Length: 78
Image (cartoon, rainbow, N blue to C red; front, side, top):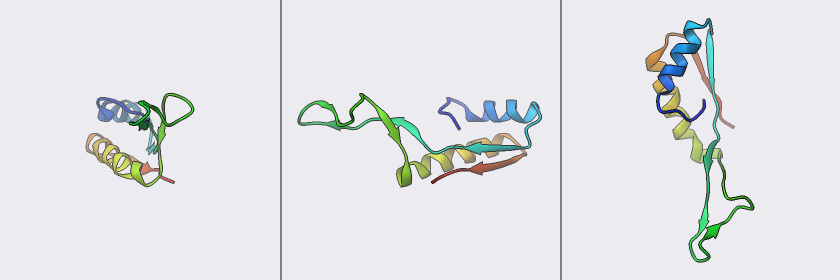
């Protein structure tokens, strides 16, 4: 599931277009900063949050989508 202001709207649009299942992904835009150096710790300016830290975010999005539709939702994490 992409980062959106209202995941329910996208879920409803998919359902009304004929989808019978939605899938939610588990990486999100993020970054980390070395506060001593005042610079990103990553080679690029930003990266992605994944792994165990992303699970609560993904579950929250799945829950919001579930409130909006009556089709299956698979929350993918790994």
